[in-house]
Length: 178
Ligand SMILES: C[S@@+](CC[C@H](N)C(=O)[O-])C[C@H]1O[C@@H](n2cnc3c(N)ncnc32)[C@H](O)[C@@H]1O
Image (cartoon, rainbow, N blue to C red; front, side, top):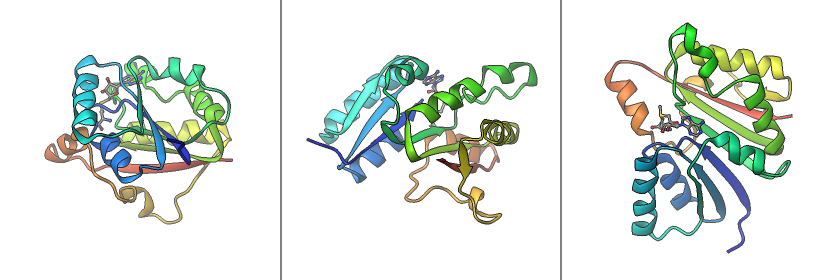
């Protein structure tokens, strides 16, 4: 079935968010990326159970699929609670980097959205600094509370629930490709 837009989620983990969005938006085509085999198996079972037809999956590093995709083909990218690497000496392992932001920028359509959520303050600052340096994205926040408000129709994720149990709140950042 033809789709009206394409949305990619990198590192879907338990898949709660991807399944929720795909069920709620049958006219959108979803690309789910997750290298962890148990998560992939669980998601496949869930897709079959629900009979969803609008999800395609990639079971390796998101960098590989991003580099395979043509320019300006994606409407929306979700990077939700990527591995936090909280220790400073590991920050360079974080998925958000100058080079990966450029990968997102290349595959996004003009006006496309990059949405990021994290419960780790230093990662949130890290992303804002990288976005600022990149210069090809505009932060959509209009007021101080915007980034504390979950994205519209937000189902939560397993990792987010764990953060809450451990007393950490989250930031929700949306950036538009300029
Ligand atoms: C902290 S978990 C969060 C999972 C899920 N998004 C959530 O909020 O519950 C980070 C996920 O990113 C995946 N991941 C790590 N590096 C990745 C990469 N290079 N490409 C795609 N996924 C990756 C991990 O396997 C893991 O499932």
